[in-house]
Length: 162
Image (cartoon, rainbow, N blue to C red; front, side):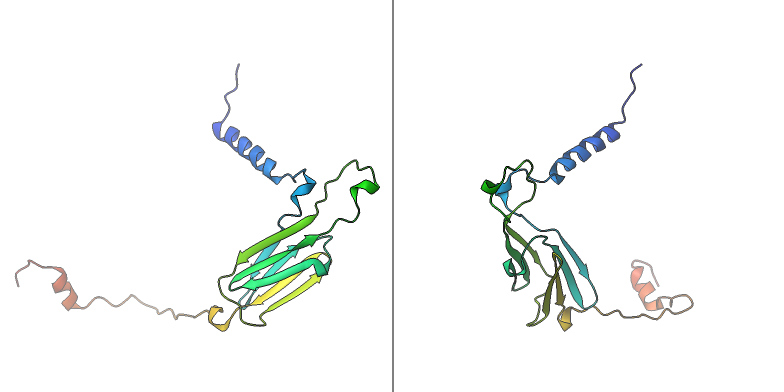
């Protein structure tokens, strides 16, 4: 007896297979280091960005701001040339990398701090005073809301004789 397949389960399996294909690293070493993985978090007064840059030398990293666009770029240089050894597997990537993101504000002069530690780039971008969110507390009153005034009721019922 043939078992009926749930069409949603089949579609989900196909989508997972398709997405899995995008998750694979490119096999061509000529593509370059690509875009580094980043994490972005927001606090009340700053944005915190971390970028994974394993194997990259600090002097090969560029961080810049163009108005409200943050750009992280640089180059991961190869440690040795291919001619020196007979390679069996080569999955590491080398070359230029580039990552940019737009901030919801234009940082003020001196508002960006950058540190590089153990292959991770840490950026702290302080928000300008006008971009810092403030929370306002609104008092809750007890009892029913006030009823509408009688004048507004007469205006709401046109066509009735007085």
